[in-house]
Amino acid sequence: MGKRKDGVVMDRDVLDEQLDALLAQRTVPEMRSNLAHRIIEASQDVKQDDVLYKKVGGALLKGAVSILDSVALPQPVFAVAVVVVMIGGAVLGARTGGLKVTTLLNDIGYASSYDNNDVETFIMATDSFEYGDFL
Amino acid sequence: MHSKISDLEELSDNDLMVRVQKADHEAFAVLVNRHIKLFFSAAYRMYPDVNEAEDIVQEAFLKLWSRPQIWDASKGAKFTTWFYRVVTNLAIDHVRKRKNAKGSDVLERIMDKAPGQDETLEEMQKQMILEEAIAALPERQKVALNLCFYEGLSNKDAAQVMDVNVKALESLLMRAKKGLKDILSRRGVLDDPAQGEELGCNGKKKGRCCYGS
Image (cartoon, rainbow over all chains, first blue to last red; front, side):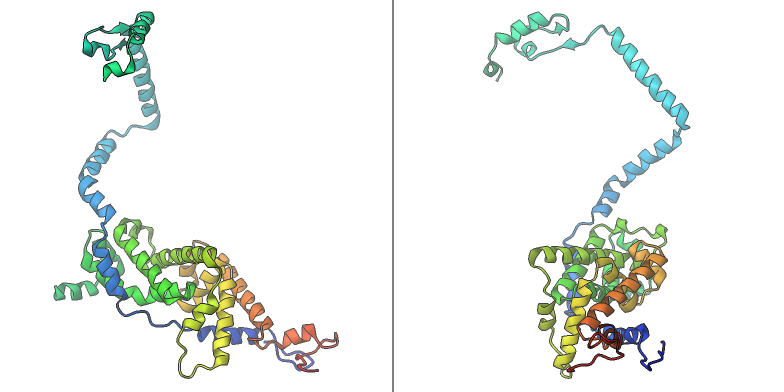
């Protein structure tokens, strides 16, 4: 606290003291006495999401994590493995020579399956039926 | 049953939380009873309305019960420090919602408080102005003030609750107090002769404000 030449003893310290005294007077009223009881009672109707999850899925999750942990690969090896799988998939896809397209027509005996190449036949067949005919 | 509860009362907050995470309802009850006053007080400081403060505390505890895994002991925070953050954030949400809904109603809330027998009108008026001044503070300054001044948290703990470093917390506290002093001096609640000096009478610097001249 500073005392100036003109005898005025006033600076921020006095204000601080006043403010602290005022803040200290700020009281908190009593809460309702049954608040704790209300909370505990309300919690009985509330499901514990995480506990439920833990109980139901915990064992499965744990198993999955342990399997993943046991096959942990160094990152470059993992990346190479992913690429190899993708290439393998592409090669296998190319070797099958196109997908077979099976339509609902099979079910009602008007047509069998069509090769991808046989698009024209497919379109002609489907055009000859109304939507409702299948239902 | 009774002996179980008294056994639970011996446990630390962290141990109780481990049990709460295993859906032990009695452990939750012990935790609620242990801390309800503390957190009601914290909520009320942020939102000076008994009903709202109770709602905030209830919401916070129910959130804790429904998702106890959000508390992670391995992060090293004390349960109370962590839960202050939960309560404070909920209180801030309530304040924002209420502000949007109908503006500040500090006056109304203070008037609703039943005054004590010895509470004079002047004191009530001072408290009212103080509440208005606190309500007008930026949220983070208000939180810092409440945690350090009223909840008695150390600067380190308060900083942890607010997710800032200690220096930033001290800066928030300083600004909060400065803001309050400015408002309260301007409104005549704090007796600030320096203000009289700055304003002066007849444009001259004076040590004390010259009322009535």
